[in-house]
Amino acid sequence: MSPMHHVSRHPSRAFSLVELLVVMAIIAVLAGLTSASIAGIDSANTLNKSASDLGDIFARARAYAMSNNTYVYVGLEELDSASSNTAGIGRVAVAVVGATGGTRPYGNTPGPLSDTGLTPVVSLARPEVFDNLHIATATDLTNGNLASRPASGTTGFIDLGNVMSTGAGKSTVTFQWPLSGAAKYTFDQVVIEFSPQGTARFQDQTTFSSMVPSYIELPLLPTHGTTLPTGTDFAKANEAALQIDGMTGEVQTYRP
Image (cartoon, rainbow, N blue to C red):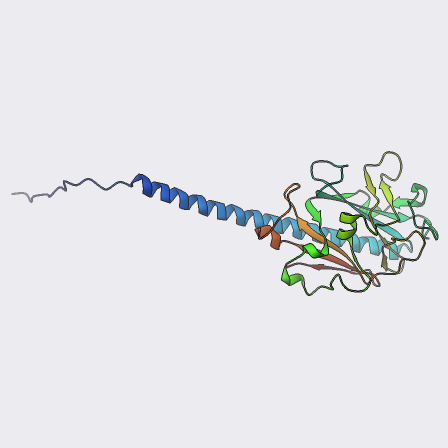
């Protein structure tokens, strides 16, 4: 006689609607956390590259000034992320030009630079444009790991972000790009001068009386278009500060 097989009379228990909803909610939360982490990583990578590239531009501008025994001017302008010629947030344009005669092209009266006395710096012949980047102020950088950098209270410290946000103490040495004709970019707030000796200066006076600063700082925050990180946003930790030593012209990058 063959052995008897016992068949359960109870069907397998299915998931209830409540259990399915709980599982779906957990998946949604995990997906959200993953997306935020990925966005934060992308933001950090973008800021790292932008800060590195900007530091390289400053270094090459200084090297050009010293090797060619002339004066070089680095202009910065922040634009609306959706427009190449409208002031706003989210896109930073940088252009570098050099004096053709080996002397300051404005004499004792800092002012708009004439295209006849300037030339594009060969290695930086076109403006660089950085998307999803904001020139912040020194006080916007809240991460404690940046506290080791020279503070904004240092004598002779120039906060370029404050200059751009308030318009106070803006550069009196200005130029446009292209150097002649219709301007695509107008650098009329922040223009940094590198001398043949490698020093960095920010002329904010109508006479040649601006001293060599202790530090010129460019504070940076990432953006998503025109949207800035706020509060405890993950992206808030992604911040950077570039500082140019006025006396030596050397550039130091600070990151969390």
